[in-house]
Length: 287
Ligand SMILES: [Zn+2]
Image 1 (tube, rainbow, N blue to C red):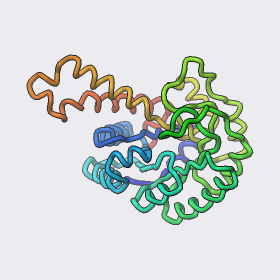
Image 2: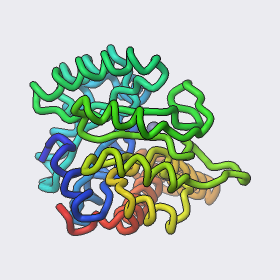
Image 3: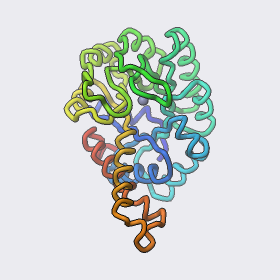
């Protein structure tokens, strides 16, 4: 069932586990993630970046596809459709299109402007029963063209944004998007701890979940992280499985060129990755 992400993340924080946000790119991605969530009896958040929304034919197409699958595949676990790193304008577009959750990434604005825009969007989203995530401190790596350095957020600024009534908060703690470089310094648990002490019950979000060692993920959850974003890892798994199929010449055997056959190994690889993450995050059986 399609729900906002507010309740599922409150429950996750109280239960000391995290819900995965898995970004979708097309029908195969969406179906693989929804079926795995159902099989694992886990709540799930489908992340949609602005670029992916455009690629899939617009936000209304995304909402129609997800709602159709929830009904036709009998998906009964809680599912949220969430705008990932939304700009001010796109937050409004997604609210209109029927998303159940949005992220306003105002981290590149001066703090006063981030506060003003976040305040406005919190009121608008909540009036529609939609949850909202905000970001403080830029998260490193590339976010749809915006490149950050992997800095740590100022806990006092986090408290200021948390007090605006956002449902969950993303804060930079040394994490970055995409693959981690070999010389990565790791997560700053000191920063995370300081943020949680000031923001209390508020579920915290860890972006750039690909390649963070399992022990660090578990420690982050113990310090208040209740939502972990996974994107690159599913892409790598899909690409590797598809490459293997093509390199083995299977597309040239029988009807191996049929897209339903050609994309099947990648589909299964996404399912396996999502299952592995749900187990690591502790959300299995929590729907
Ligand atoms: Zn992110």
